Amino acid sequence: MTNFTLSDLEVIVAARANSDDEMSYTRKLISKGVSKCAQKLGEEAVETAIAAVEGDRDGVASEAADLLYHLLVVMKVSDVSLDEVLAKLAARTGQTGLEEKASRTDD
Image 1 (cartoon, one colour):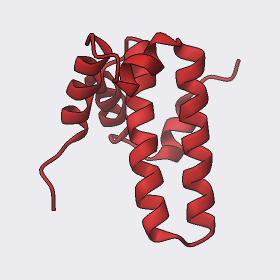
Image 2: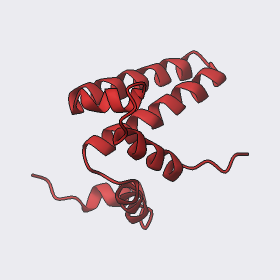
Image 3: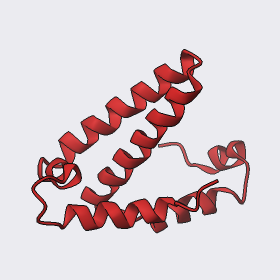
Image 4: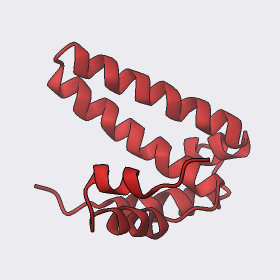
């Protein structure tokens, strides 16, 4: 078991996004803007889903790591913190998904 957290990754993404390191993949990706970052997130989501359908356990772990990284990059370029996302998740745990859906007003 590792002590590495998504909070740790968020700090790393932020540091690399603001670095002057010409060799930083994070910096180069973020410099291409939110559309490119979102495209990469989508690609990783698809690759994760394919690995799952194929029953490739190691592939799912590897692709999920890429997916989480790219999600945090998209969150960074969108100025959304991990704490904000966790607060949304925490708010949803007080009721079942069906109760939450039923409480929404139809537009």
